[in-house]
Image 1 (cartoon, one colour):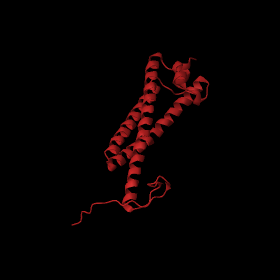
Image 2 (cartoon, helix red, strand yellow):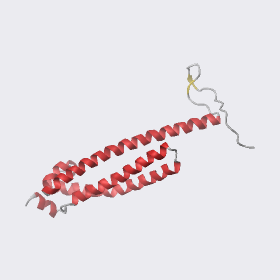
Image 3 (tube, helix red, strand yellow):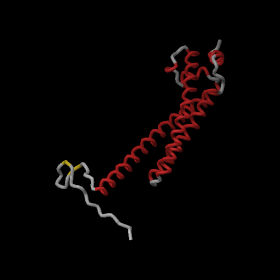
Image 4 (tube, helix red, strand yellow):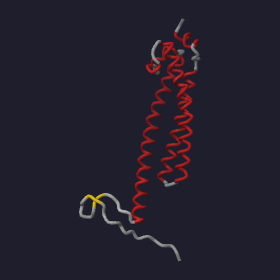
Amino acid sequence: MSDLALLERDGLRPGELLAHLDEQLDSSRRLLASLVAQTDAIRTHQVEAVLARVREIQAEVAARARIELERESLLERAGAALGIAPEAVDVQAMLPLLPPEEREPVLARSAELKGLAREIEQVHQHNRILIRQELAFVDHLLRALSGSPQGGYTADGVAGTPAPVNVATLDFKA
């Protein structure tokens, strides 16, 4: 029995891996779009938009849990057909099990997915840095306005807690 026939018998149909990769790509593109929109919202200080993007990201991450279960199933079935552990199965290992006309498209989609994953990680890390900077600025403003001491160096360069900073504020009351 050929590897392809064995794989089909175990439940992996022609086109199934391509369809799965397309689903992963679609999900990754949505996730990246939400992260990029979140970057813009952070930069323009649109708090509600940032929170809306967080909800979108959470929903996409939850949807990806189902996709991950499908991926695990594909790897288990391919591993069984190849006689190797599912965690040892990768796209290269699956190529002999695929119809010849699917091999190149599978490799192309896999490469695109890897690129999207790297880009998602970079944008996510960038957003985390932006949010930390914004929160540090807000913390600084709140401390300055309340007269709370701030850690750091004093005017003479000695580490410690300096005296409260007096900040002039505008009073718009008539």
